[in-house]
Image (cartoon, rainbow, N blue to C red; front, side, top):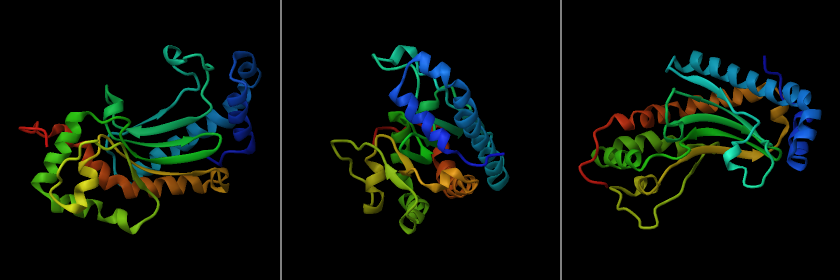
Length: 226
């Protein structure tokens, strides 16, 4: 059962950021396991199970990040991450190009949301084609975002803007990829069980968006990129 992170969680994250080497990590490995890895795993598993109960079984799996960086991408940096995250998603060979739910904790902030790490250009072309076919349906989908302040739409836009069918779909129409994200500085919530409640409520709100986007890749290829 997740009972919150602790000051020792933050101490470890700051410690590994400032001492990113094997001797320091080995000396603090038990602290990593008990104060960081274990509660993160407990939180992810609890949220995963509660989300399935609240929204139905969608074939999700729960993944936990590793503390070790990819050795091919160190670029002179230390071998350990000072952050961790979990994801809730459907199994996929290309996890970077499918929508996922995630939660991340770093020394200075925490964040969660739903979106793509990097959507394929073809996926976003299919989104634009869907919007073209029925812009009102898409406007109805995204309308609840205007009435809340938990999640912000984030993503890089095309330099050369594309002509959207309506003003309300213009921002989405010009994105290369996107996430709906909430991020904030470390606050008392992370020390409590209520963090689980917050994540489940947020993911439940985002589920209609997930259901819409996860089926994009099954759409026929657009006759031309829109």
